[in-house]
Length: 192
Image 1 (cartoon, rainbow, N blue to C red):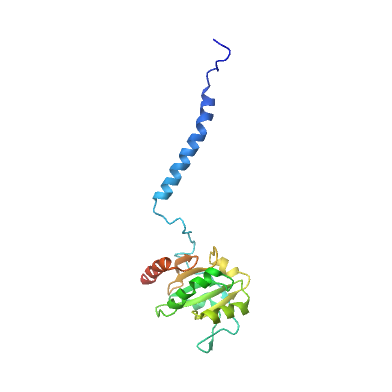
Image 2 (cartoon, rainbow, N blue to C red):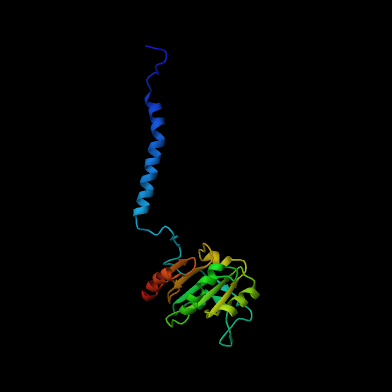
């Protein structure tokens, strides 16, 4: 036997060589299953869907009016008896500006009220935002510290929740309302 010949490998050293391949194979199978599952990878789960909307009371946005009448603040007790669409928005949020025309059109639907939670915003800026783009909201509560939004299981601004007449969260839209997301929301509304 020559000195250059390698000694035979033991079982454990063969396992060490194969381990990276096994890990890669397991990860490939996991990702393939996720890809083929048909689940929307952009969709984040919401612990609130199917549960009662959180309890909160928020003061009104000062000087905000709709049809010449001051717009009241927002509390969980206001959202009983009729379905509500709750939109979390801010004047500094570019996607909120992009979704605003859709909210304005939804405000014309008599089956539900559209209400807003103004998230960590300067009241003057929020007033200018709604004054310039239009006010789709029947009620607006200001949430200067963001505590109410956190209770809603808020991921990021904007978000929209559909609440049924009993105060139960039935649907959640993460991110701005778009024509594609609007179809899912309309399906949820029609199911109420």
